Image (tube, rainbow, N blue to C red; front, side):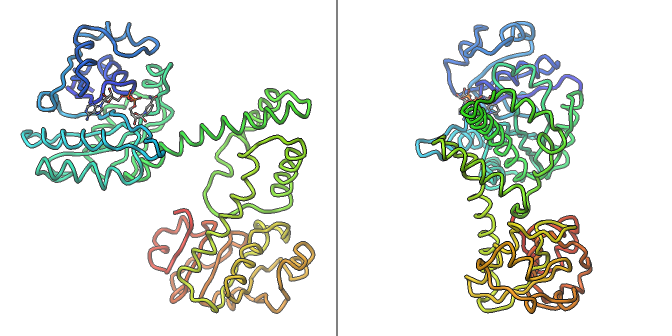
Length: 437
Ligand SMILES: NC(=O)c1ccc[n+]([C@@H]2O[C@H](COP(=O)([O-])OP(=O)(O)OC[C@H]3O[C@@H](n4cnc5c(N)ncnc54)[C@H](O)[C@@H]3O)[C@@H](O)[C@H]2O)c1
C-alpha cells in the first residue's frame, strides 16, 4: 500500500505500538490521546511507556509521526482512524466502556466536517454487540452520516502481547476484520496484505467474541497446565515433562479436535477418566477447580438443552431423541448424554421416545440401571416413524437423516450436535433450534 495518512486514537500500549509500526510501514500517522501529559512527552520525542524495541523504532520513524489531543485535527488530516482506547474492568468485573463511548462521540463530532468517506477501525477489546449497538449508532448520530455511506467501520481486534508487541504486530496469529462494509474490508485487506497468516472477514459480533474467546482460552491453558503440573508433582511426576508429552500430540490435544461447539461428551473414557482424576486429586486434598468443574460443566450443557426444549415444547408432549449411543458407529451407551437428557425431559414432564438402530433398552438398563425408566416399546423401530413425530432432538450419534425441508414441515427440530449446521438454507426453512449457533 502506498503511503497513507492514519490517526491512532489512544497512545497506550496498543495504540503507540500500532502508530510506530504503521509509520514503519511508510504511513504518516497522527497519534491522539486525551492525556495531555502523554502527548507532550511524545511531542518531545519521549515515550510514556516501555516496550521492548519501541524507542529505537520510534526514533527511526519519527518523521512519519505527529501527535495531538484534537480530534478535529486528527480526523481532518487522515483517511482512517484506529481506535485503541482502554476497556478496563470496573470494580464489579464489568467492562468499562466509558472510553469507547467518549472516543466514538469525539469521532462522530469530528466526522461532521469531513466530506470524504472515512474509515473508523476499533482495535480495543469490546464486548459482543458494542460495534452495532454503541459505536456505530453514536457516530451516526453525531456525524449525521450513515454507516456504509459517509463512513465505514470495522472491528479489528489486536492480538499483540506486551514485551513482544512489535514482533507480534508484524506477525499476528491471524487478522480478523469484523465488518459488513465491503469498502472497509477491502481497505484493511490491502493495508494488511503483507502480513503473514490468514485474513478473515466476518460480521461484527463474531469478531468481537473471538477476542474474548482467545484470551479466555489462553488463560484456561495457563490454569489447566498449572493444575496438572501441580497435581503431577504430588504424584511424584515431573509436571513439565507430562505437559511436554501432552503437547506432542498434535492430532487430538493441540488441534481443532474437540473444539466444535455442540453437545455434551459421554462414552466409556472421557467421563470415567475425568471423574477418576478428580477423585485422585480430592483424596490428596489438591484444589483443582478447572479440572473439578469439567463434569459439572458437561451436565449444565445437557440442562441447557432441556431449557431449549422447555422454552418451545408444551409440557406433556412427546419428544423423540434421535441417536442414543454416545457417538456414531457404536452401540455403546455408557455415560451417553442422550440418556441424561432423556431423564431431564422426563423430570420436566415430557414423554420421551427414542430412535437408534444400534441400541436396545437392555443396553441402556445395563449401564444406567434405575436411573431411567426405559423399555423396548420406547424405541421406534423405523426412522420414518420416528421422524413423523412433532418434536425431534438430534444428539449427533445418528446422522443418516433426510436433508429435505418436506421431512421437517410442522416439526420442531433441536439440533444439539450440529448435524444440520452446514445446511444453512434448510435451517432457515424449518423450525430449528440449536444451543451454540
Ligand atoms: N495491552 C495489550 O497487550 C493488549 C493487547 C491486545 C488488545 N488490547 C486491548 O487494547 C485496548 C487498549 O489497551 P492498552 O493496553 O493499550 O490500554 P492503555 O490503557 O495502555 O491505553 C489506552 C489509552 O487510551 C487513552 N484514551 C482513553 N480515552 C480516550 C479517548 N476518548 N480518546 C483518546 N484517547 C483516549 C488513554 O489516555 C490511554 O493512553 C484495550 O481494549 C485492551 O484490552 C490490549
